[in-house]
Image (cartoon, rainbow, N blue to C red; front, side):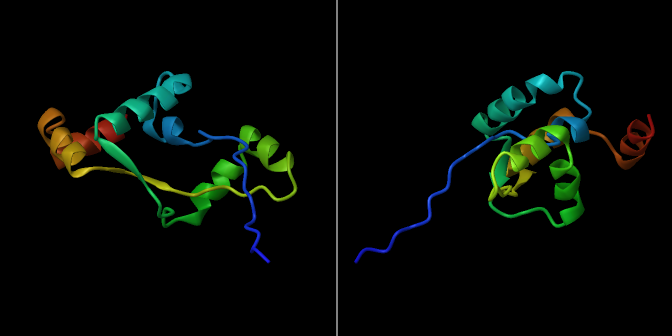
Length: 109
């Protein structure tokens, strides 16, 4: 007798808070931004979940996520983190040469 593997089906993708956290003016374009930054090797998705589980709770409380989670009895979110690659860190250092003072003043805006 063969072991039967449980099957999973993707119900929705791209439910994230990347645009909100990044302060994007056009949150409808976030998927394109992320795809291009990944393609260029600037960012990558990690298989690791982020350290703060509250962040995922905030995401799962968003109307779009609630709708998806309610659509099936056994839905579960795949939690991953997004990080800069070493190339991405170098690119930011060259293109965004902000010191701590500039970073603090820009975050106060």
